[in-house]
Length: 231
Ligand code: SF4
Image 1 (cartoon, rainbow, N blue to C red):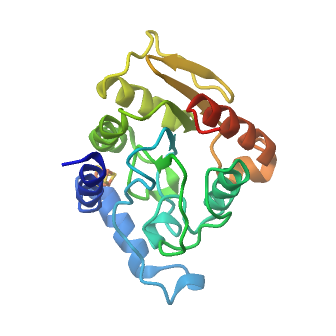
Image 2 (image 1 turned 90 degrees about the vertical axis):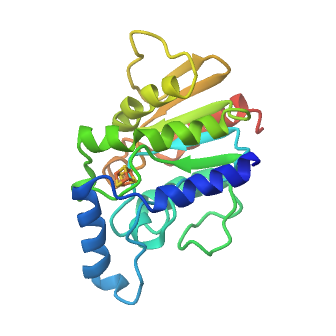
Image 3 (image 1 turned 30 degrees about the vertical axis):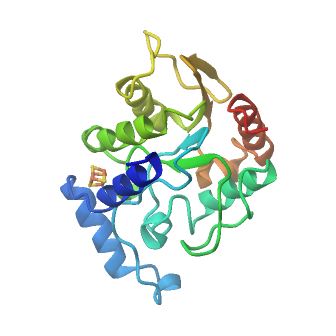
């Protein structure tokens, strides 16, 4: 099996996972009750797999799908304000085919980039528990292992993703320094054959307050794309 079919198979297995009872209940309840603005949608209501090609050179790791974003559309960062900011920036630096991401069949392509998360189900209040983070980690480890032959850079959005991603990179075969490097916006940590970048999360709280500006996000993505050989 080549890596693209192996990754597609992994994505299908992720989408069937029911290992976290609290998150299964929440994602399905949100899918039933919906937000009024999306009353005519059939929500995805399942784990949201990563999105992007199997030969990605750059991976972007967030936190978890949003209740009415990825949990509605079935695609990472699709259909919410965080995704609006992220995909606009990816488009601006030449890594996405279009600046918007509104539903899973909108024709968006990513160029050499895969977008994923350490927790694949929407959590209440966007806050997975440490136990849920650890339960979901094997999916990220498997994804990173499949991407490893081509992967040269990673951008991790926020401290939660950072804490979840470092052990996943270690389990997937990279050498992660000890003690583990702390998260900071703009930090760059060389692993063996891969540069790891920290970036504030594209959450509404960060983007509305200006803690993360579009310029700051573009700068990290631009540097990471160069490191990955995508520019
Ligand atoms: S968060 Fe991850 S481990 Fe938990 S149910 Fe969703 S996909 Fe499965």
